[in-house]
Length: 133
Image (cartoon, rainbow, N blue to C red; front, side):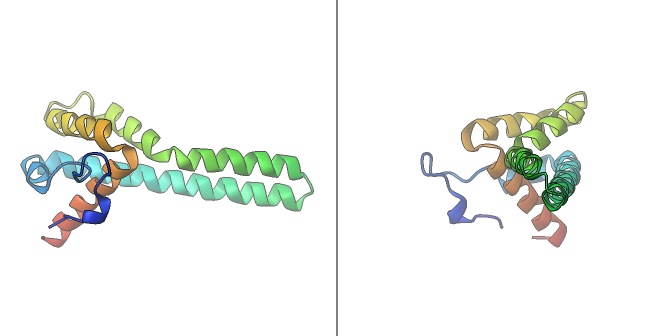
């Protein structure tokens, strides 16, 4: 069962994201949502890697200012990737009726814990579900 006390927030003392019981109640849609966010996260990291490679190449060519600006932009993109991934996933699932309870739970948890904690908890719940825990 996913109950890691290290992930508890300082202000509320609660764990981020939906509980395993809430995940099981909305399992099919929650798994699709988790899978889609995982794909978007992979794409964000690939784009970030390509951006850093482009920055390294620009620096190698002697355009140090361009390299610095590119690396800074990629860094800021990767810092905010969790918020972007959740926004894109919520936009995709907004018109699906069966996704309503999952989106309500995610909106509740986003207000309490923030996007990184919610994404991490959703990924952990999906991973535990695949492993049969």
